[in-house]
Image (tube, rainbow, N blue to C red):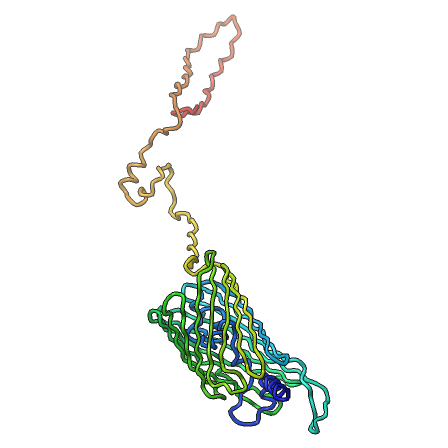
Length: 405
């Protein structure tokens, strides 16, 4: 029981290493070195060259370029002595070659007893740490490149600190062989109280090979800055289910460099895919510490890259403008060529009867004829008659040549 208790305390110290670290080469924020999905954990963490889903943000950001649809992934991990972690990742294809991603990881512990220099219990304290990440990847054909930015935070008791870091990754496809490389946690130091600690700069180089359609093999070498390098290897075997798009996965893995009391380094897991949903389970024994369990729920949504149409919006139609040149007095046929061809313009200027209106000739107005008579000689026996008034011609307006009906 004493040995098990000491091992459980070691797990707690893993979560708050900076508070107790004393020697050079130690690093902060243990969550930066933990697996981010049950699938990767079951394959021994050999995921640098496999990364092809939303969890790529935790291993190799270039793997986001392989996501064909938008995907959301949520992971819960139960460790020992009240240590647990929560993960979330999102992949969003944004074009034929560009993909964006985001993720977050938080590690929590239950209350830890606090003692003074004499070993007297004076209360308890808690510890939590985690980071948020934004990623982008571009597919260049056989080569994919990716980069991430991280915000890291750690809190122990009443002290907290933060830092920023970046990840960089690449994938190269050669037939069924895929090579991957990643550099993670390149950034500033994190300072708790008066002590500053570097982040665990991690370099990994791996390969994956799909021997035939159901079987995938993967291996990689990973070297954190504060630990010796380790070999990670794993496999994934898939079988078709009864329904369209349904599959069952069997996984196994191995991690070298384990101590005798922390387990043999073996891992295993299962996965079930039902249409757009997938559930993955990972299991890893830790010797005297017990066993770690991890569960991931993933969901794909939206259209695939092949179904999407990434087109530019249609150009705006130009607004109609009036011809600044004055129109002639007479109407011309609606033919724009008359303004460009002088001969057509001359032919169209001749008056033409309207094909729509019917016409009939108007009779000429009657003429008023006036006959002048010589004045009669006045009769001396009769009074003189007044001279007759001359008729006044009425001005009749000339009739138009045609009358409309």
